[in-house]
Image (cartoon, rainbow, N blue to C red; front, top):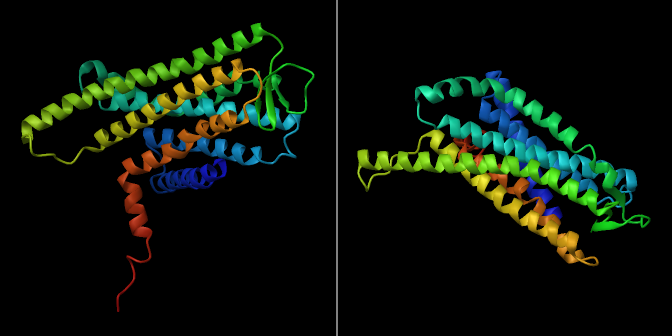
Length: 292
């Protein structure tokens, strides 16, 4: 199942990265949302590369486990930070054009680039302690918390588990909370927009949605998917940590679901961007063939 996820998710995320690279080469710049999509695709590609190396059992000695888990945590952190930043940007974009929002709308796009760089720096720093708790599965000299196929998460004391759990949970919940708040705000704005459009055009008439509305719906779908998967992952981690003995099938299921967001998120982005469909149509050789 993990191999199938790699075969599906990796090419799609690479396509996103190449497409936005092509956009940048033609326009010499990316919009704020495109820059965030590029950052998200980069994090997803990093996750899939780590998944691929994870299957190389001979590579996964103690050092390999530490390196892979460190960069997996960095990529996962980038994913949540980037999705949060995207939801905040879209919430500001579709907010009413009042004097209260005017200054924020003007300043936020200029901050997206620095925010993306800051997300890399913060995740590289906050996950610096991860290698201390990783070892290969052959190491039995210290207590094993739970087994990750060829690697193990280890701990020296209950106090260490508690501190790490609180720190990483607060870090994740901060961004999940911001995503949830911005998504609820977008739902409210879209509901008001729908009521207004319905009043102007009549109950049986549905005009084509504006690009901002389509983008907002895509972001809401991304956030909903992430929050659902995050909730499932949090529950599963607690079950695995408190379970006595190993549960290979449960761990395998947990690993498969852990990468689901990286597989589905690029499809949601592609579906919301009409330029990508036009790109495929223009590049299709069948449509450009001369019938004669």
